[in-house]
Image (cartoon, rainbow, N blue to C red; front, side, top):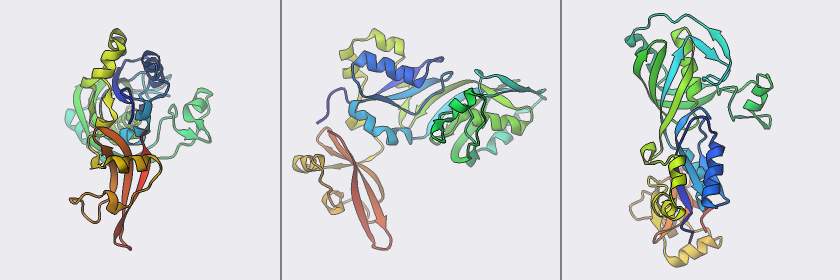
Length: 306
């Protein structure tokens, strides 16, 4: 089933706009009421924003979970309350002469699984409110550390006090916090002066449209050439093909057993999410879980696409 405009569109967000600004403009352009984004970008940041249309909004947990790649510039010697260039300066320090080798060694200390505290100016929920709402009132809240994974953190250029970095990291990583922590590790502190998201999961900003370009195109050309259909939106998720009868049953609430849908090439202990398709239609997402005690795999439909 589904409609031609169900899916995702890749937007290259410009600086100075919120992620919701982008959603609102795409909603206005497309005429689709149900529009969302997968992974917020700070207003000052630029780059890849995955915008979900119609039934595509049901893909949010899977689209946001992918690894992210960023390029950023941090300025040493100046710390701000937002950890970026939009905030008020809270501390200035002298920047010593830092050799590239020392910078690289410090960066390597942050590679792997680390703990970081989200910025006070962030959308993290605290007592039912966004943390930034407290920060705007001058109230500092006790945000808990969270574990994130940094696959790589490279120093790409040095022109003190500015240091350019490239980061590949797990979902939920705050590059502002990472830069502030690295700045403190080096001594003089730091804040971000630029941030650009290059990749999110399998998607690349090189395939994204700027909003000005989007507005210059016809709606038909966008839906025919730029909207990624549901069927193609999760290319890394393993696929199970079902027939028309099973597709209709699942859409009507049927929960198939693992033996009803499993592929012959799957091991008995398979675990993970799977997409169920019927021809070129996305039917559902299911989750397989293997029980060591029962030595069997259970299966449950977690999301159905109409």
